[in-house]
Image 1 (spheres, rainbow, N blue to C red):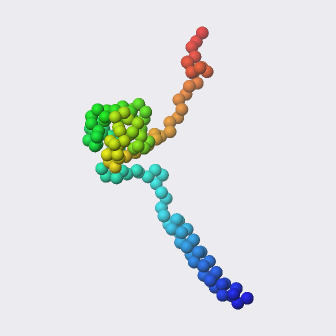
Image 2 (image 1 turned 90 degrees about the vertical axis):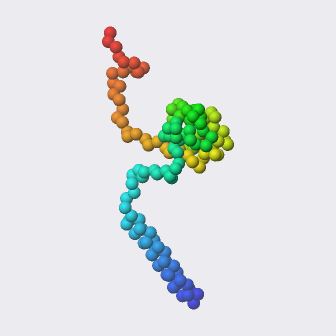
Image 3 (image 1 turned 180 degrees about the vertical axis):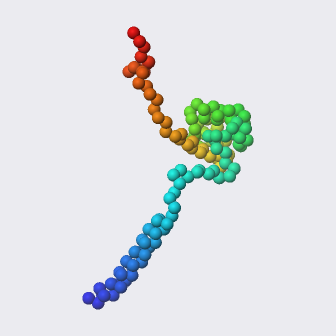
Amino acid sequence: MKRELLTFPLRRTICLVLLACLLQAVSSCVRSSSPDPLPEIREPEGLTDINSATLSELAVLPGIGEATARKIVAHRETFGAFRRKEHLLLVEGISEKKYLAMRDLITARPKRVAAHREPKDHSSRGSNGNQNRGP
């Protein structure tokens, strides 16, 4: 019986501390302003975005000359934006050694998705996609 009486104040104190922590967490969430729907992505200073860099910007990277810069741009135009900077290794002429020399200088910033467009009206087309022609 004595043992229970000694632990009751300790339990009560622990419960009060936990309740105070919970209230503090809830109040800090309520006080904070609503987050931006799409926060702007900022690159660290000096990084070259391989998805938007020009030929001249790519050509100054270590191990990349004009010819390899053209290959990077051609790859980007053919296959779309690089998802990760490591995907630069898929470009002909970019060896692992070249990539390691420039990896701290580049980034592959994702492209923003364009606003949703309404679908085109294809009601005048037949089932095979060709336009209906008169008799």
